[in-house]
Length: 269
Image (cartoon, rainbow, N blue to C red; front, side, top):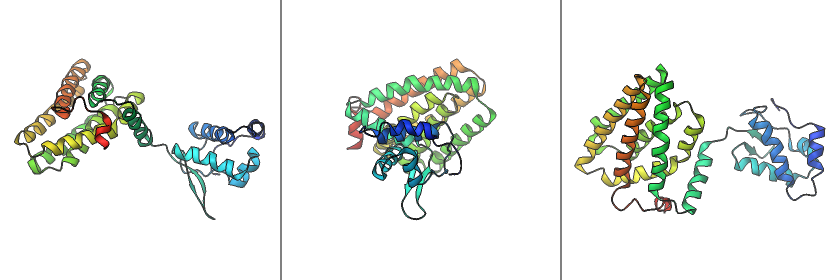
């Protein structure tokens, strides 16, 4: 092991005392998870060998491997088999949670309008925080991204790749969330990524050949520039108000006629 602290003998004893419980693997996973999330083990660090962990926790190989499977499902470790294998710590990915949240919303028959309503509450608040906390690096990154979008629109026009446009516009929204300085709000926005990006790609693909679409793309770029101007001026109220107006207009177009009542599951059929 290259770093961190695996539970000592007294802590391992607590796990062994529960060895008759059908949840022994969950207890072991909890012990190892605690070490990882506290940063005592970092991405790339190797866990002790199976033999060492089996001895430490007083459990069988199947039980230990079940604990490994739990941690793998949470993207906290990856396990390679063979002579050079073993368990290594990995950085958890928001995409894992995003897929699960998407499934929960589908199962609950959540409408697309419901998802956009949540975004219209979340993102304007982040725009306000961004205006209050922005750095020169934030402004530079936002303007660079807008320039990229501008080039896509002006150089390709109606032949623009709808998937590229969807990816780039969604990335701008992500920057607003991430640079707001509030990690919890940013993560909530990130969890909606699969739903929003899928819906955006479908809508843009549907309307990409409409002559009005290129005008919409240009207005979108102008709206992004206005937001960054407000952010640069540290006009937090103006940034929040403008971004709410932008989100409302975008939602009307993205949902389109007849789509408002559709559920999230319709996107993934």
